Structures are given as C-alpha cells and as structure tokens.
Length: 213
Ligand SMILES: Nc1ncnc2c1ncn2[C@@H]1O[C@H](COP(=O)(O)OP(=O)(O)O)[C@@H](O)[C@H]1O
Ligand SMILES: [Mg+2]
Image 1 (cartoon, protein in one colour):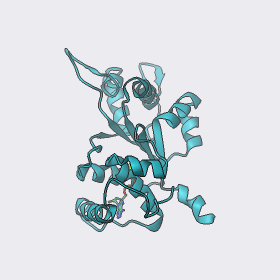
Image 2 (tube, rainbow, N blue to C red):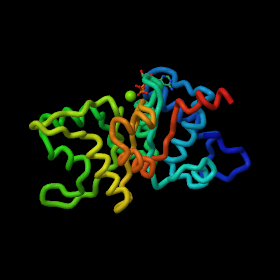
Image 3 (cartoon, rainbow, N blue to C red):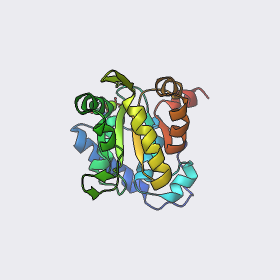
C-alpha cells in the first residue's frame, strides 16, 4: 500500500488531520504515539476509511463497503489503533470492540445464544439492527468445547456475519496476528475465501516484503 501522491483530490486536509490524530492518540495512550515510516500508509488508509473518503479509497485501492482486517505482529499497535479511532469519534468508527477470547469465554458460559448476540438482528421482542463489531485478536481463542460438540465459535460468527454482509451490508472489523494461510488452516477454506470478500486487508507486516524491494 502506498500513500497517495499529493496531486490527487481528497475529501479532507490530511496535513491537518494526521498531526491532530497523533495528538489525540498520544493523549489516549498517555505517552507519545509514534508513527514509523512504514506505518504511515496503513494509518492514512485507516483514517481515510473511517472518514469515508471515497477519493482516497479509490486511489489507495480499498473498498469502503468492506470491513478492515488489520494484521500485524503482537505489540505493533492493532488494538490501540481501533480504540484510538473510536476515541477520535471518526464518523465510521462506531464499532464495539470485543476480544475473541471473551467471545469464547461467554460462549462456554452461556452457550449458543452468544452466537446470536454477535450476529442476530433480533433482540427479544423488538427488531434492532446488527452491530458493527471489531473482533480483536482473531486466532488467539481456541476452539471451544460445548456440551461435547466442537464449535469453532469465531468461524460460526464470521460465517453468519458474512451472510449479513452480503444481504445487509453489515460491516465487521478484525485484528489478528495470523497470516492468510494460518487463518485458512484454523478456520477453513470456506471462511478464508469469504473473508477475502468482506475485508480490506491492511497489514502492518506487509512492509517486510516492501522493504526488500
Ligand atoms: N503508535 C504507537 N506509539 C507508541 N506506543 C504504541 C503505539 N501503538 C501501540 N502502542 C503501545 O504498544 C503496546 C501494544 O499495543 P497493542 O495495541 O496492544 O498491540 P497489538 O494489539 O498489535 O498487540 C501498548 O502498550 C500500546 O500502548
Ligand atoms: Mg491486540
């Protein structure tokens, strides 16, 4: 992913937004928020996405109708970034963040209704629209056992949310330190191919390759 060249039209003045973002992020973390050269374009794209900037999306080749899958090594700042974007109150940063580990813990405690909680539009007695979620740290949750049945909780939730993405444009975001092939291994080919459709993949670690070029 490359930063757009200065000449292209954008909906916002990023020369003002980026320093503002860094100040907000530093306030949120309680220490200085660093942006390395390699991370600049990921951050730029993510912020443009949250601002719904269609011109930047076109230039940087991501899709505003899909969610974001943010991948990268442990400790690179994935969880912080999603929290900070929400803290900044960007127009599209209205998701709930829930760790996959706690989803599975809930499932073990409460069973199948938990799958509905993260996928269903129907609340008791009334219709509510399904929420945008950011599932934090996909892959760290182990396949949980429930009443003797194996249930890959996150796979079930994501497969259902994929259907809702197709039918109702429901958005899902994910952070993970798994690679594409690890995701396929853990969740199966069926989900992997659907994930390709429902997410823009923003990778902090993609730059390892770019640096060698
Ligand atoms: N850009 C940044 N500059 C400085 N510190 C950061 C930055 N991003 C994250 N951190 C800090 O690094 C640590 C790891 O961040 P975290 O978001 O938990 O990483 P990840 O979710 O990728 O494992 C946290 O203590 C966080 O405060
Ligand atoms: Mg994290």
